Image (cartoon, rainbow, N blue to C red; front, side, top):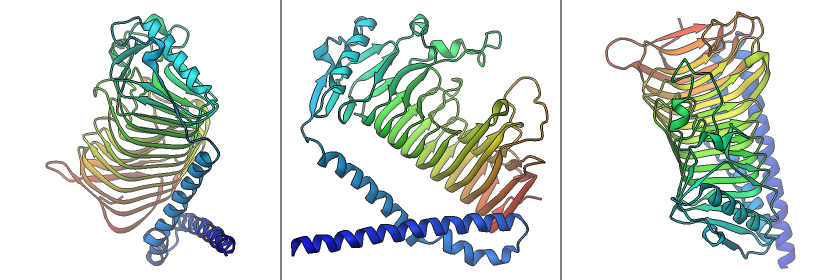
Length: 459
């Protein structure tokens, strides 16, 4: 009887997942098809009933979330069920790490040894960094490892500020390369010690040559990755970058550097699929979150951003490149005093697409460019040459976005003449001018639909 009951439960479970999957695909296709039709000139009066079925149906959203939670639980179960639950703890102090004031080279080598010891463990391991400050040269935590592995940072890991330490690789400090089933957490601090790099940046001193600076933390080709409960600060350039990775959960990060620090993106997503970023506070000198080519299914929720340049998709298409980003959702974000709010930026001359993007439930407070699509992005001193090709921007939803704009132009759609923005939908968007004056919208080459209260409106 017990076996029969188990088979019945399993059959019901598989049918349930199949229904959810079919419903998900159906709804996504319907939304995309509608947006394409609306952008082509269909009557918007037919839209409300269709739209409410797709995006305001809480049951649909809950089903999708449930499906995601179930799949995550199954992955976790397969990991635990297939391996021994015993875990070995490797304390870096036991390998000779002497904490701040010791030898940078010695601390780097001993932490590398601790990692290799843990990575070679078949029972799973924790690399434990206790409540001290360790100053490290560039280091690569190489995978794959034999089992699940955790880097638990209770103390402070600080970067060497000797520029000669970065001669072999001037673009990275801490790198996690090809590690599966990795967790990095612990409540401690990772400090890029970036002041010397900022002082030598051409964006700070235009008389200096432009050179790359290290990204503080890079996760490269990692699978089933959790990064949580950390403070990451003062990066040499970008703070944390996820590159060519899959299955990433990021939560409870505090990412900070001075407002004037150049190119210090908080979280950078490149060529990465299935990443969730939640409950994080980010304030830097550049984008709070930047999402570039090859990224799919990127979800960011409960993000506090400021200072910085907002949340950006792009830039895309630089040097006539072919770039693709799709399936991005920002749901629940607060921007305070940032240069931009939610931004899509592409260079002329590129190709590819940025599509199926949602910006939902967002609060703007004194933001210079709250909503912006810029298909004529040009981050260089000399003017960019006008070109016909462009990265296509298509199917973008802005819903429940409210607050204040520090500039007159609260909404700016500067789209390509040859590849105009298509399927742009604004639903309940209300942005007012901070202080005196009236906010306006500037809209060029955009195919737009509106629902509910939208202010300011495109002329």
